View 1 (spheres, helix red, strand yellow):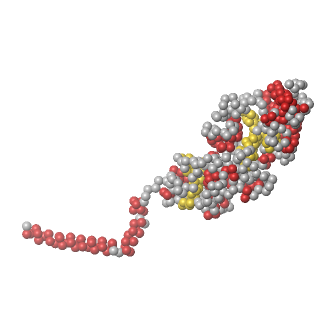
View 2 (cartoon, one colour):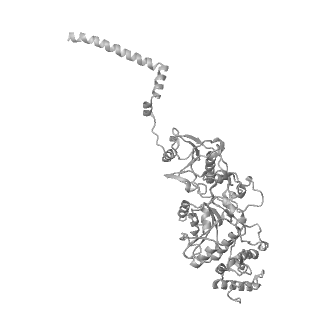
Length: 549
C-alpha cells in the first residue's frame, strides 16, 4: 500500500503541470483579439469548412435552363412587378445580381377606352400628347441586363396595368438588346406566376421553355422594337410612326436586310358559293391596283369545281381547307362556320398577310401597308377593330392558341370579329380609308358623296352583285337604308365590266335573288320611299323578269 502511494505522486504532479499549461494557452488565445481574428480569417478562407456552414441553395428550374441555354452561371436580372408577391427570388442573391426595376404605376383613372377610343381625327398631325401616359422606368438606369424576370397581373384583356407591365418588359428587352450598344445581343425574359404574358406582344413562337408557373421567351428583338415604337393604343394612328422606308426599326433585322419578305393578300370562302362573285371582283381590283403580292384563297369543299376554276382564272392561288365550326353558334345559323377564317394563321409559308373579306373592292394599292405588325386594322366601334381588313403574321402555334381559346372565349357579336378582338385586345390603328365602311347611318348628305381618298371599300348590306346594276338596292330595304350609295355601287360595276366575259357569268342573278329584288322594289313603291329609286327603269340584262311583282 505505502509503496504504491509513493509512486503515484510524480504522476499527479505531471498531470497538474499539463492541465495548467492547457488552461494558460486557452486563456491566452481567448483574450487575444488579434489571434482570434486570425483564426476566424483562416477558417473563412478554407474551402472545406465553408462548405460545412453554407446554406444549401436550390436553383429554380428556369434558372438552370438559362444556365444550360447560355452557358453562363451568373446573370444580371431585372425584376418587374415581383416585389411584395409570392415570387421567391431571395435564394438567387448568391447566384445572380438582382436589380429591382422601379416605375410609377399607371394612374387608375386611365381606362381602356382612353387608350382605344372609338374615333380620332385622322386629318390632324398626330402628337404623343394625344395618348394617356403609360409610365415607363428610366431605362438608362437598367443597363446591361441579361434577363428580365416579371410577374404579369392576372386581369382581363382590357386591364391597363396588365398592358403596362408587358410594355415595361418589352422596352427593357429592346433597350438592353441594342440600346446600350451598337450591336445586338440575345435577351431573355422569364414570366413567373399563374398568368402568361400578352400574346399580342410576346409571340408564342418566341417561347423556348415552360415549367410549372414559369415561361421563358427569347424574343425577336426586331419585331419587338417595332412594337415599342408604335403608340400605346389606337388613340393615335400607327402610320406616322412607321412611314414606309423610313422606320427606325427597319435597321434592326434578325434575318438580314437582303431577305425579301414573303407577303400575300388572303381571303376565305366557305359553306356556300354566294361570295364567289365578290372574290372574283376583289381579285380583279387588287390586280388593277398594280399590287406585286400573291393572292391566296382558302376555300372548303362547298365550292364547285367550275367556280374553283373561275377563281383561279381571276388570279387566286387556291388552298383547300377544312372549315372550322364556331363552338358557341347554333346549328344552321349564319355564324356556324365563321371561325374558318382562323385558318389564315396556318399559311406559314408567308411572313405576313393582309386578310380581306370577299365583299371588298380596292381603289388604290395597299402594298405599303404590309410594313405594319400583327394585329393592325381599322376601327369599328367602341374600342374594337373591324376584321374585314387586318394584318396578321402566320404562325402554327398562334393558330393552336386561337383554337384553344375558341372553347372558352365567347364572341361579343357571335362572329370571328368579336372573338379576335377578345384575343388581340391590344391592336394598332390603320387609317379608316383602308377599310371604308359603306355605312352612312342617318347622314343623308353623305349618301350622295364618294370618299375620293378611300383605299378600299367594305360593301356592307346587300352586295352589288345581289342588286341590279342600275342602282344600289339597299335603298329599297327599310332595315338596310344606312348602306346605299349609288356612286360607290357604280364603282363596283366598273370592275365587273373589266372582267373577262367568262368570269362575269359567275355574278349572274339566281332566281331567288331576282325575286327578292323585285319584291323589295314593290314594297318601296307601296311605301312611296322619298328617294324614288323604285321608280328607276331597270335595264340590267342580268334580270330574269321584265316586270315587277
